[in-house]
Length: 288
Image (tube, rainbow, N blue to C red):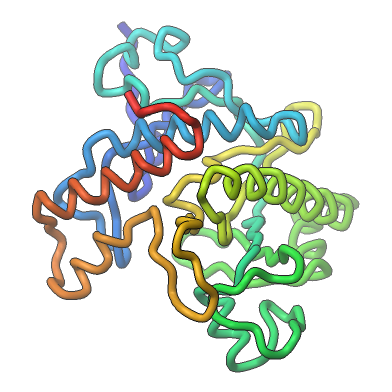
């Protein structure tokens, strides 16, 4: 049996190279405040992997995506073990476009801080009198650079994004940037409307895109999970205040009061329950 080692390992994901494709593994590791915590969240990786699969299937009418299979039977024998079951995705290899495609449907986080000080988000002027966590008149596309390791991402305008892409893709910067904007907004609008019907507000999220061997833009990475998006419960939502969320809220709250890199069992259980609740609401199925 051929063995594999990850060629890239991030805080919570690992990538394996199969020459003609990739295996992306969502681990159960969890990070907060830039630290990987000692205790994993059991089943977290599989929940997020299957949630991405759900959204990839849901949005393939808008844009093709990199997903080939999440069934380990479609992967080399090395991956056909419980350690990779459910949490692994066989994916197309893409030439990734170095832009983080951020879309904001509600005003929160760094966008809210910017609006309070400047009246705009990433240079986009907004009406006066907006409240924290209020829905924006229209979703905003606020891209940033995807900076090399060790450097900080920077918010960019459409014009700056075109120049940024032009460096790697001469003659294509403006065209690609416009496609990224249009695809990002189309995916967000479709998914946010669906999620709202299921009781979840998708306040903001980010997408990553790449080019396939034919030069076609393809959706990659993960999509619309509580780890790369802000999910709020619709029940109890009220503008003018912070909102509870479906992500690492319990972990962050605990670590704010108890600094360190360790979690008690009750925080692990509560966090897992939130991930499972989001999965159930969005897919209509209990996570198994």
